[in-house]
Image 1 (cartoon, rainbow, N blue to C red):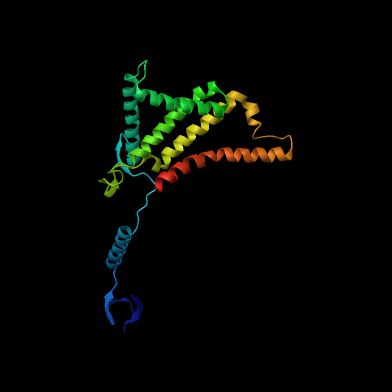
Image 2 (image 1 turned 120 degrees about the horizontal axis):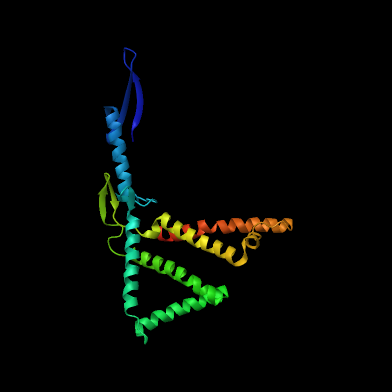
Length: 243
């Protein structure tokens, strides 16, 4: 344990002195200096990073293209997108009028999802309209999360701008990606509501002056509706980021 004191020389000048323990019951006087303090703080910081868990919420930048930053989560997003496009093209070439086992299994899965959406929306035509968007988001999140379990994701490190950063990061561990998906879902819901019910009828859900109770209920409904952006984005982000 260090004991810090302050002394006065015969000429009246102040001397900063620090005593650090060298062994049991033995101390050595050390003249403090800015260099020594800086080195001590550096060693303390490095020891804290080595002993603790280094948590980074922001996706690390690993390069740039024409001034556009390239992050490690963007690399994984492009890999997941390329994999989905490749599998889609391969499956489209194998489609047959008389389906095999693989095609029949996938068709059965898609048909089950479509029927579930039709029951939920109570409209077969609307279910068919939203089926491509919902299945695209589902398959993208599924593939992206599965890729995060591959060896090397988060463990392969590179040097960038004097820092050691992981080359690959799970896309859903980047709040930008989950927020983008939340915005897409939010806008789809709102635009569909206006298109189906009309602007004034849909807006009456949130602004209703027929009674004080309906007005308060409308405000609460508006706040809960906007809150979807937070719940949609942070729910997926938190689950994947926490591991």
